[in-house]
Image (cartoon, rainbow, N blue to C red; front, side, top):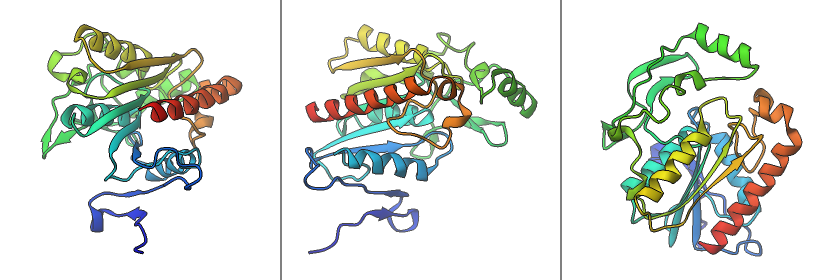
Length: 264
């Protein structure tokens, strides 16, 4: 029997990733798969950690070729999974977006604190129309906001945009044919994900969306609304100040994931 490939590279396969399948005795959904999408850092190691953890809980992660395909994405990855389900509605039937944003954002280099005159997302080599920031980004501004709030903080880029985004830059979530599950924390310092999640829910309602959709809001949650720990936990105030609540949210996130995927 040919051994199933588990590691994928850009050179050989066109993408960088790792397949994590549950052990046979744990795998209740052998024909279902969740693709994990990281945030703006594109850190595949974080995605692998999350993938491995979920596979240990009975959830297959990453690979294609299954009867049903769902996407899980956080932060910038949330925009990616929502857009993907809009562009490929007949392929993707479950979208889980943690710390979501409801519109397409401008490209940036968060390590150098530089904005680019381009979209953060493209399709077939062309920019997907994006909403430009109205506030200038600089190293000084980012340092000032981070020191002021005792954690990384980019919310100043988004506060004025919430509810004021051009229609052509809003993610057309009504085009999806997928069940939608959103997670957000009210203490998110990166962008107003709870407000974005509510705007997405309202849009689906207004458009008479025919598939299930739900937004789970965590009172003391921050930006890292993941079902497992991350290397950035200590940087975020919500995780430091409310460790018990963070652990509980993660437990509930995982339980909801498992329940949703079992019923999907």
